[in-house]
Image 1 (cartoon, helix red, strand yellow):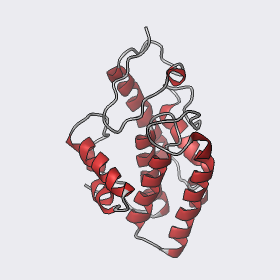
Image 2 (image 1 turned 135 degrees about the vertical axis):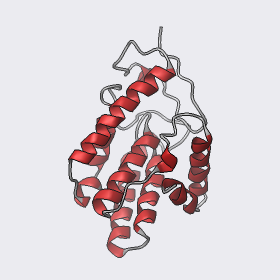
Image 3 (image 1 turned 120 degrees about the horizontal axis):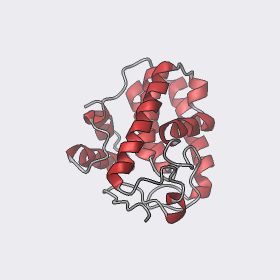
Image 4 (image 1 turned 90 degrees about the vertical axis):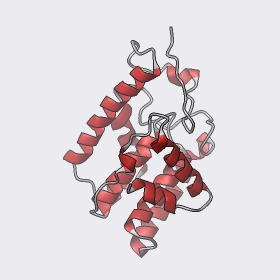
Length: 198
C-alpha cells in the first residue's frame, strides 16, 4: 500500500514517480510523513546553527540545493535535486536553473546597492524562491530556512519568527502565510515581511 497524501491549500501535490522516492517505506499517512520531515528539518536547522556561511556561498545554486538536501535527505531520495515535473505552482521545470540565476543576481545587486532594507531583501528572495518552486516538495519550508540563513549570516540580524508556526497544519497561521504570499504575487511584499516578523 502506497502513501496517501492529503494536500492543504497552497501545498504542492507529489506525482507518483516522486512518491517512489520515499526512503522510509513504513510511512503510510500524511501525519507520519510530516513527523519524519520535521525531524529531518530540525537536524538541518542544527546544521545551519553549527556552521558559518559567507554571502558568496549562500547565494549559489549549489548551496540552495544543499540546504534542501539537508532538510529532506533522510526522507526523500530526490532531496536537493531540482524537480523534473510540472506543478500547480512554479516556473516550467526546465526554466528553474535560469530563473534561480536571475534571482541570485538580483539579490546580489539589492545587497550591493542597499536597494531595500535587510528584511525586505531577504523576504523578496524568499518569495521569488518559493515561486520558482525548485523542488518536488518542501519549497515553502526550504525558502523560509534560506531566508533565516540570509538574514542571520549576511545581515547579522535575528532569524524570522514566521508567526511561530511551521505552516504544515491548515490553521490560522497557514492562512495568513498563503494570503501574504498571494499579496507578494501582486507586488505587495509588506504582508509577508510583517508575517515573517510576527
